[in-house]
Image (tube, rainbow, N blue to C red):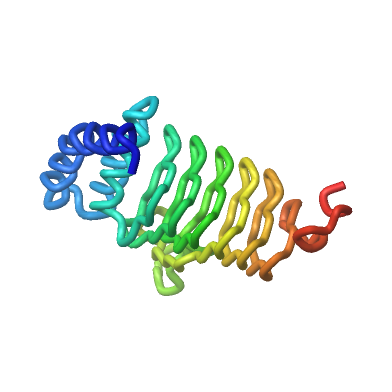
Length: 203
């Protein structure tokens, strides 16, 4: 490890400590999920390399697993502590990640959203009331979304289903169904445009 990375890691850990302490104190009051989101929003705002190293130190202690050399971009948020991130993952700016399992060498361009499945808010079938729908009339259902090794997700893509190894998701695509390994997807909803390495895809 280079001296610069060592210094960056140490300074990042120091910057992360107040956020970790506040997260620990707020968990009993806000509950795990709300405390997680509040902490993620605070540390997302730290700029520059100091912010990058602070987010890396923070998420290594909060998320279920964070691999080596992970880049956490400015203003990117993680909402579920059960998320897992592999080695050499790049998370761009303004990304939002829920309950996801992200493999090695994955690239998330700016503005990517990985949701916790397709059906996060479902109406209760047995609500038994004709009153206007409210938050109390919904049940929350989360599914872990898996992003395979070497997958690339284009800017602004919204992903609600698993993405296979080496797949490429075009900018602005909305993925509602599982994507096969090596597939190239684009559009709303996303549809196959070829295979990885196919020069005709996206043209």
